[in-house]
Image (tube, rainbow, N blue to C red; front, side, top):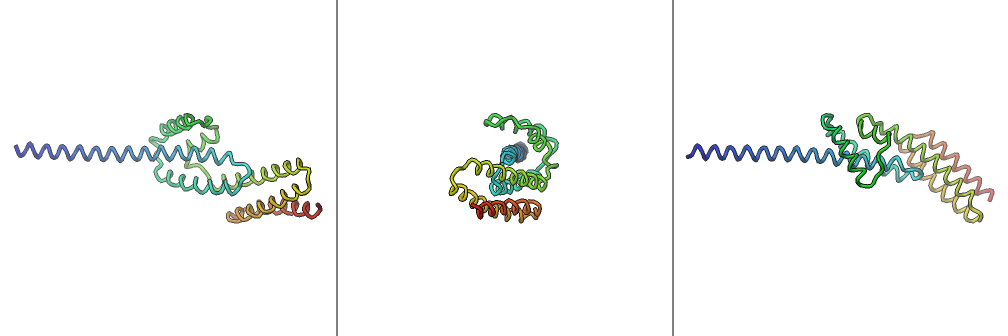
Length: 190
């Protein structure tokens, strides 16, 4: 009878251990999947940013934190299945199917070069910023409105220069300084 009781207690302990171990495994899989899904959404959002450097920079910092967390738990054995699930959920949530660039990132997150991505995106944002504002100003008729926009542009450029200086992007700083000078000259001539 005592032997039977001891066997029953051992059996219960083994079952509790297995359940706990399975729960930890399930929690890890859930965390892996959720983090992958978050990265998919964030990366897609980063790619879409066109003229707001500060907004992009803030989003990029958050993205990098999640990417570091993900790399710490990266598991090649389950990654392919998790990517499929994350992409399916991504589409179910109303997003467009990921393009090649997004899929490349999500399938190979360890190959992602965050510094190069940031530099290229900063370059694109700065070029888009100038194009956007020059088109907007060309459509304005009132001199007061044009002056106000140019002053706003100069303020934005100053903030962008500070942001680029954080990463030592001297070429981009030079581009911004040239555009700032162009706006200052336009203000002086108006």
